[in-house]
Amino acid sequence: MTKSLVAAAAIGLLFGMAKLPFEHSLEQEDRAAFFHGAKLSLGLRDQVGQLGFLAALSGFRSLVADFLWIEAHTAWEGTQWARMALLFNNVTTLQPRVLMFWDMAAWHMAYNASVAAFNDRRQPRKALRLRAQREYFELGKDFLVRGIENNPDRYLLYERLGIVERDKFGDHFAAATRFGQAAAIPGAPAYDKRFTAYELSHCPGHEREAYERLLALYRMGKQEWLPTLLERLGYLQAKLNVPEAQRVYIPPIRPGQKP
Amino acid sequence: MMDTPPASTLPPRTPHKLFSPARIWAIASNTLLELVRLKVFYFLLLFALLIIGSSAFMLDFKFQEQFQVLKDMSLGSMSIFTWLLSVLATSMLLPKEIEDRTLYTILAKPVPRLEYLMGKLLGILVLLLISILLMSALFVVALYIKQQQVLADAVQGVPPEQVQAVIRGVKASSFTVSLIPCIVVIYIKSALLASFTLLVSTFATSSIFTVIVSFVVYFIGHVQGIARESLLSSPHTTALSKIFLAFVALLFPDLRLLSLTDDVVAGNAISSTIFLKTAGLGVSYFCVYSLMAYLIFAFKEL
Image (tube, rainbow over all chains, first blue to last red; front, side):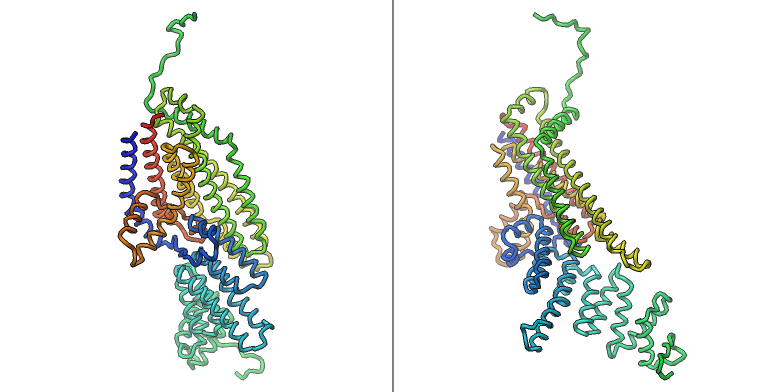
């Protein structure tokens, strides 16, 4: 019996030594494929409780994240914005590769919570309400930036960040950059390219670049001749004083407008 | 006194085979039957309740959220149930057979201990396979029903030229091919845990001890990767800690590498290389633990 125990232990140890380099290389491959990216910290343990943390450590991160997500949904129904932000932080920490969590968290903060903060009648000073609104914009943006850090290979969050930069911060150049980054990722929708050009067309000093991009899109065919594209093209042709002969698009004359 | 029948009427004697798959299958089927009689499949009711609950009570959510929760719940429950089933069912195999004295009856016959152990393990593997197939079938049906519900709502009022895009979007959130290797890995992990539990039960004196050790090893297996990563990146790690870590890594399986569910549900695609390596690692663990269990059991004094 003792001999068999020793033999079994020896096999276990030999296998242990053989498997270590294999496990190490597999871990590297997993990392490269964005597996096991969650960073579980003691801060999270305080917030999700001992049982939740244990479950997260034991390979049930997605389940814990879902329960927290449902909790955040309940908080939303009660318009508890600060609690929502905290829960979203935990959810995205647990499941950093679920785009929907980042996307929804950012949307709730930048669009819903910001509006609620601005309309908060308990705060009579408009300046403070504006500041609170701005903070929620920043919070939404922060979710998207962190989401991109965890998912640099997916277009969706770049696109969403572009929309937030455009709609909430009015920063057209930043928006164009983000839409451009989204468009460069395989599988991104065709409109990301258009959005890049549209946003660039609003940036002083980038008119020529925007014009070239819009022209290239225009030459791709009728499917690209969308109202905004034509409008921006017409605007840039006029702004850059493109000679009449080189103009590809002649904007229609509106009623009351001089030809 | 009974008369001995004449030699010509006796059935021809077949030579005793040293290794017989038929004997292994006989033990395996008996093990399976025994477990089925213990009504282990009742857990499927719980699983079905979880699935129905997670798909029926999330109607306020966007369809992506609904699919996310349904997939998380289903695959998470599959992991939990197969883990519990493998540990609890395996832990009572040997101690119960010893207690009931059936082990002695079987081993008194010309049945090698290797075949006995393989039969027992095969019985558990078949049980786990049936369980995971049934759970997968329930999961796919629930996902399909949810998909049809969502599609019916999503295409309403959508311009005809955008219908295809909407359908594609819904389908992409629903069933993905990556779920299949993910379920296979869940099965392999449960088989690994069954073989480890069998190994512990060969030298354990009670089922409780086996269950506790298996549960503790399960947690160590999941945490060791995180602990190793955290300690090795810290500048204050002592040599003693490193030796301890190496010892743990040497002895225990890194189960985090076999936990792909969380990431697959998040939309990560499993490459065939990663899948094959992960599956290979799990199968290697299974073989080594089974071999170790045999070595200990083969020379055990019963």
